[in-house]
Each structure stands twice: as C-alpha cells, then as structure tokens.
Image 1: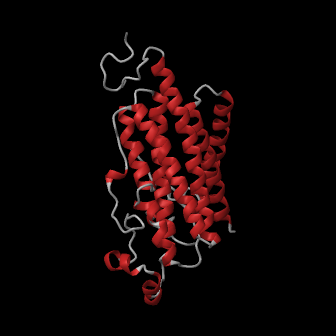
Image 2: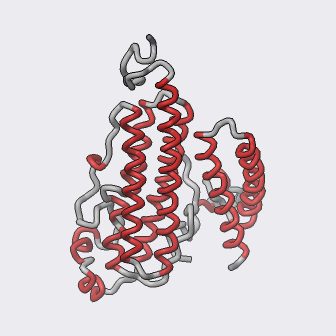
Image 3: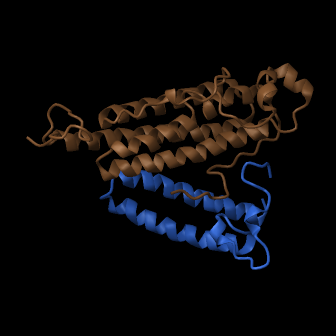
Length: 203
Length: 82
C-alpha cells in the first residue's frame, strides 16, 4: 500500500510561464525514459526478485520515482499556468493544447502518449537489473538535454536535483546487480533464472 | 521565508537524508554507521513533523488534529506556486 504526503520531494517554484519548455520537459512525464515508466518498471519487476535487499530497493526507488513524477507534473503545471492564447500559438504548444488544454497528460515530447512498451519486466533478475541501470543513464541523458535547452534558473534547479537522483539510483542498482550475482554465483555457474528455473542453484 | 516554509523545508531536508540512507541501507544492510545515522535523522524528522502539523496542519490525512473542520483538503496543494 502507499500513502500520500502533501509536499514535493524538492521545491518547484517557477515564476515565468514558458510553454515551449513545457513541451520538451513533458517527455520526463510520459516519454520513453520518463518518471512514470521508471516507477512502473521497478514496481512491476520486484515480484520476480528472490532477494530481500533488492526487493526493498526496487520498492523504494519505484516509490521515489512517483515523487519525481509529481515534481515533473508541478513543473509542467507552473510552466503552463496563465498562458495567453498568443503564447500558446507562438510556442508550438497549440498541438498539445488542442487535445488537453493545459491539463497534465503523460506524453513524450513528440506527442506520443505514454505506453507500457517503454519498459520491460522480464521475470529474470539479471536481465531486469541490467535494464534498470541503463534506464537510469537514459533518464540522466534526457535531463542533460533538458539542461541544454532550459535557461530559467527556476526550472534548472529542480531538473538538476532530478538528474542527480538518476546517478544515485544507477549506483544503487549496480550494487543490487552485484548482490544478485554474488548470491547466484555460489552455486549457479550458468546464471540460470532463480525466479523460474526449479533446480537453479541446487546442484 | 516565513516560519511555515522554513519548517517544511527542514522536513524536506530530513526526508531527503532519510531517503538517501534508506536506499543505501537496502544494499548495505550491515552498515552500523548508516543505521545509526538513520535513527538520528528519523528522530529529528519526527520532532519537526510534530511541530509542523501542530502549527500548520496535516501532511497526511491521519494527521488531521482539528476537531472542528477537515483540514486535509485546505489549499495550497504541493504543485501550486506559493
């Protein structure tokens, strides 16, 4: 179960609306390497995990990603609040506006709606943890690109926070992969799948 | 910054510290130093949250302590500019 806390993980206070920036940052809401995909990836993968340390890590990082999903939503909400029709037309935000007005809806910057094809849950812990490490790096690259496109310090500050979290998560998933491999290696020389192969690890 | 914002900012800092220690301890469950830090900051957070909810209202629905009015739904919500 989950419980909501009425606060953001890190403050978002944007004074100047900027529809053009919202149009690219929305990719971290509903895009291929966004926070929604991240959260669903880890929270779905955890059921195949046999080891407590890593069940905990997938649960805790999956939960933190939901807080990041809320931070991105807050950034988008504040960037698109009190926009004039002229700004909406001029910025190219009109293609989003026609379907969603200024409501928050998970799409990629290209306009493609969120899809579960952005992540895997393979039922094999080595495969899943390898994907998780790559996913954190892909999200870090996306934040780097957003920082290349955004000048407003009010926007850059929370984006830099989110970028740093990707690096911490990558580090922790690396440790999780090592833990999983150490446990496999004691009797499992061929990296069979401990969550499916019945005799895995039992010679 | 007013008192409410300062106190909330303090809670966020404690929460961040606890989240960092939480993830670290997941992969280092035998680290006593990390565990001691976790206990230390949990206590600090507890005191700050008690003070905040007493003075400014709930952060979770079960922290509503007003017997006259359901204060959980009071504005502003976290995504709103303050």
